[in-house]
Image: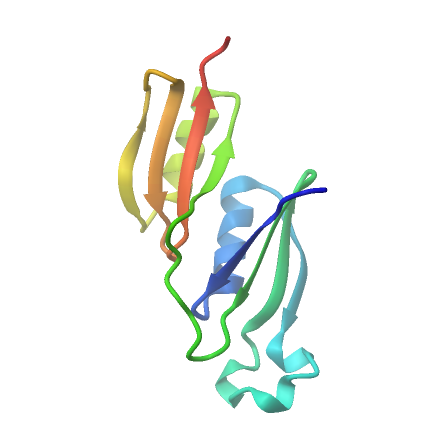
Amino acid sequence: MKINTYLTFNGQCETAFKFYEKCLGGNVTLSMTYGDSPMAEKVPSDWKKKILHSTFTLKDQVLAGADAFPGHYEKPQGFSVTLDVTSAIEADRIFKTLSEKGTVQMECQETFWALRFGMFVDQFGTPWMINCGKPS
């Protein structure tokens, strides 16, 4: 069994996943629009190019997402996508790039449990935590 995260967006899924490719590496391995689906006739014409389902993969990790159907988007709350990295330099780099144009809640810094830890909401509304634990 694997637990994967599925994100919903308010029309920016394609842009967000391209941004995640740039910041994290990995690749968008699947992307289906509403217009390419059996639902094509049921969505507004300006929504046909929006993403019904997309999959971003990084090694054996998967992040999936979609644009919420028009009028059904809800702002994410009560969770964070957490990235555990092994290097303070990598934590700083990822924090800087992913938080660009977002809202920093806690700067990436050393804490009593981690070489680096930081929290932010990215420019697409997704909450993130970056963690680089201290060696045991």
